[in-house]
Image 1 (cartoon, one colour):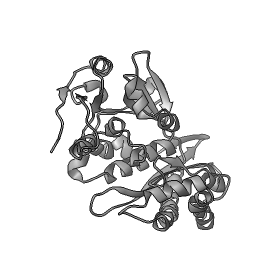
Image 2 (cartoon, rainbow, N blue to C red; image 1 turned 60 degrees about the horizontal axis):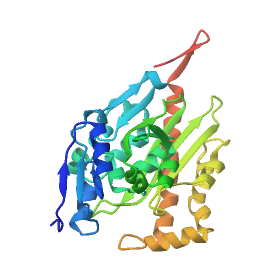
Image 3 (cartoon, rainbow, N blue to C red; image 1 turned 60 degrees about the vertical axis):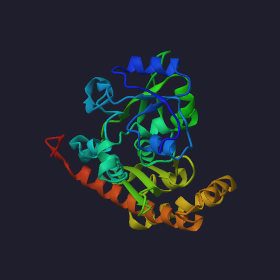
Image 4 (tube, helix red, strand yellow; image 1 turned 90 degrees about the vertical axis):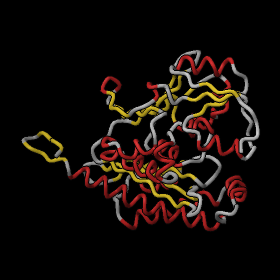
Length: 316
């Protein structure tokens, strides 16, 4: 049941939605609604006004934007299923496709929108781990002007603050694919409710001589926020993509966190009906190894797709 009464509006333009956010004190954004409505049913939050974004066409769709350096742009009212199935995403943004396809069940993926995390302010989720690893930018529409932020900046500013200022995340920009780059997302989720116990997003880029010159690793289920595992990244960058190097780097997914008392305190607070600290630590190492291995293999295949002919290269 939903124990409180609330007013509801479904504006057809982004401008109208922002105006309502400014005018209606205590208003909440409804973007798909699974996370928000669940909390309302449990009585954990009681918004007085819901602003449904489902009729705003400009917030939907996936496209390559050549006028802004060829970025892949996804509207925040695009469903998880649409994101996972889009050929542009499946071909070059594997981690994003895998993360979107891992969320909930088929019904949730077909109805839930990627903007649901912004409405609910879910800082520890699959999508934010991927946007961090893939260096995505979030386009925010504000009464004072539009601007873009990284995943880390978005987390630091907090979604609650954004909403208080009447701001809405309109779309997400993923950088254009670079030859020799591969990505992957590995996740272990609770078999009953589908919640993420641990998720690891990885992006790897190999130089022409086969050395890893870029490595990004982001984790969810580690703390109450999505975090980057910088020690894992540093360990692998500048190295050959061997199994031994991957194993050595993956071990730091646990060791780099276990030395921090603050992180230990947060991990302890995450111990619930789902998993212990020790089990989560074990999962981080295993999933990091798997994600790195698959991302490296994809980066190799991507590099092999480039053939040189008469001093020029083309992609098959």
